[in-house]
Length: 192
Image (tube, rainbow, N blue to C red; front, side, top):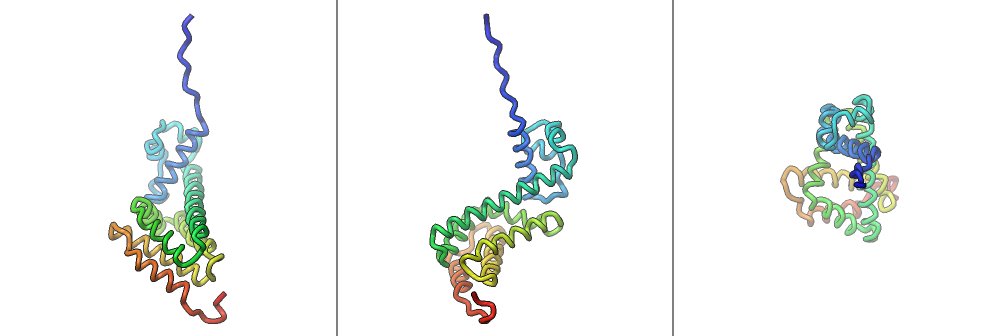
């Protein structure tokens, strides 16, 4: 007796995950306004019916994509600040981690597209604002809030410059800026 070939196991959770990841990637690059079930299905490599099976309307899919994008941003910051902690949380540690990030042109372009999409998309703007605030909070063990904000502004500006020029900003410039932020004299009422 010959055995029938076994069907591949269906993986509903894996398919749903692929759909959410595709939505997050599209939202990160283009914002929420261009998101459609069809575009997500194509990007995820799944049949169109799969997206509507898991997400009955575009708002559910958009919400799931935004939540995933927020999770990924938080994961990136976790990794960045783990590296800063491993390096001692010093100005040199911040400069090294920022310079390492800026050397990843593909990631810088994705992150810049995310912020560009936020300019005209209120849902994206909210997520971008939360990302900025997360960076500030993660810096607080090392510096006061004013310096944490300055470090985040530096990171965002260096990201934009790197994207626009197609190459990382000079690492010595980043190092000087980070050291200056750490060394800046603040009003005694503001200093830590």
